[in-house]
Image (cartoon, rainbow, N blue to C red; front, side, top):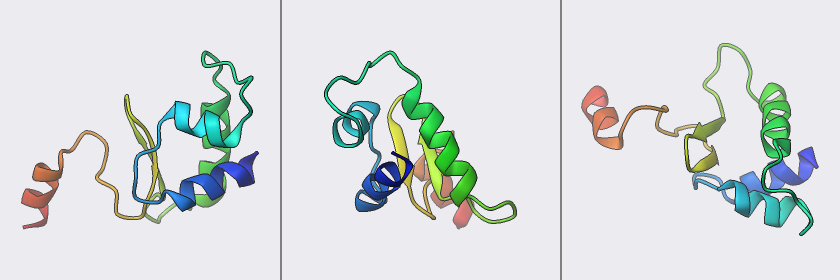
Length: 87
């Protein structure tokens, strides 16, 4: 399932993907929506693809889902705040 999760996130790179969407495409229709299985697999994948000292690739968007991107906005910062910081 880790590979299927990475493949799904890679196909949707740069776009926030919600839990329901991940469950629909990676797990079968019998998926329990109250399970923490997605978080467990995301954590496993994150430990494998994110290297210490480098910018993380897999980001959590609180209340929205996950995004695979090397240039995602850091959590807690709006795009406007990020533009101001970059200026």
